[in-house]
Image (cartoon, rainbow, N blue to C red; front, side, top):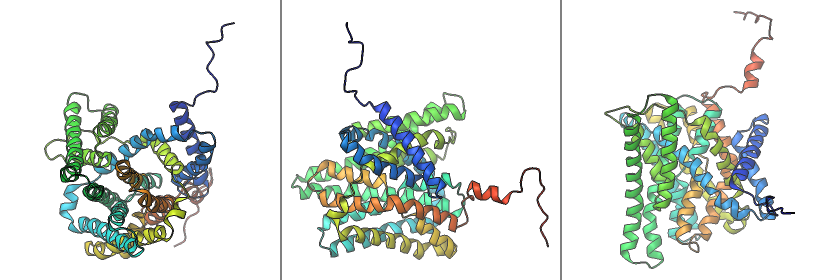
Length: 418
C-alpha cells in the first residue's frame, strides 16, 4: 500500500501553527492577568517565560528565533503608530515638552553611563548601554493607553516623549556604531560611512514610504477600510525593505509615521485605527520577547543590572521633574508621567540586536546588562505605566468597577442626598 500521501514523521512545526499557538497562549495569559487586575502585557510576557523551557526541551528554539519576523512586524506597526502621534507643531508651540524629552533622555544616558563606568565597565560598552536606556518601550505605553482607555495631558505627553526618546536612542546608538567599528580596528571610511548610511538611509526610506502612501491614497476612495489596508501594507513593506537594505527598522518606521502625520499641504491619508488588527502581532511580539529573555543574564551582569535599572529610573523621573512643571503640569501629573516612561521591552532588544549582529563577541556583557534590565522592566514597567495613568486620573475605571456603581437592572438609582 502506497502511503506517501500521509505526512512524514516526525511532524514539522510550521510558522502558521507557531503563530497560532503563541497567539492563543498569549491571549489566555493576558486574560488571566486582567482578572488579577494586572496589565494584559504582563500575562503575555509570563507566557513567553513559560514557553522558553518548553521550546528548549522540544528543540524548537531555532524556529522561535526565526519567527522574529513577527516581532519586527509588530514593532513596525507600533513605531509607525507612535511616529504618527508625534505632533511637530505641538513641540514647537510648547518648548517644555521637547525640553522634557531631551532632559529625561540625556539624564538617563548620563546616570547609566556614570553608574556602569563606576562599576568598571568599558566606556564604549557603558555608552551603548546608556544609549539604549534612553528608550522607553513604545509598545508597552501604547497598549497600556489603549487597554485602560487613557486620555489626557499625561497620556498624550507620554506617547510624544516615547517617540522622541526612541528616536534619540536610535540616533545615539547609530552614532556610537562608528566607535564600535573603530574598536574592531576597521578602516575609518567604514566607521564613518556605515552610521551615515544607517541614519540617512532609514530616514529616506521613511520619507519615501510616506510620500508613496499619500500618492496612492489619492487614487483610492477615502474610506477607513481601504486606507487601513494601504497603510498596513506599506508598513509591512517598510519592515521588509529595511531588513533587505540593512537599515534601521526603528528609524525608518518612526520617520514613516512622522512624515505621514506632519504634512502641511495635504491630508490625503485617513487617520486609520491600527489597534484591533495589530493586536494579533502585539500579543505575539510580547510572547516571543518574553521567551527570548534568558534569566541567566542576572548571573553575568551582577550588580551592573541593578545599577542600570536604578540609574535609568532616576534619569527618567529627574528629567521630567526638572522641566515639566515649567509647562504648567501639576506635581501629580509629573510623577505619573515619570512612571509612564519606565518600561523597556522589544525596542531595547532590537537595539542590542543591531549591535551584536555586527560584533557578537563585543556585545556579550552589553547584552547581559541590558537584558537583565529588560527582564525586570518587562514585568514592572507595564505596572508602572498603568499606575501612572490611573494616578493622573486619565484612565477609565475597570469594567467591574463600573458595573458596581450601576443600580441593578429594573431598579432605579437612589437619589443622592444633598
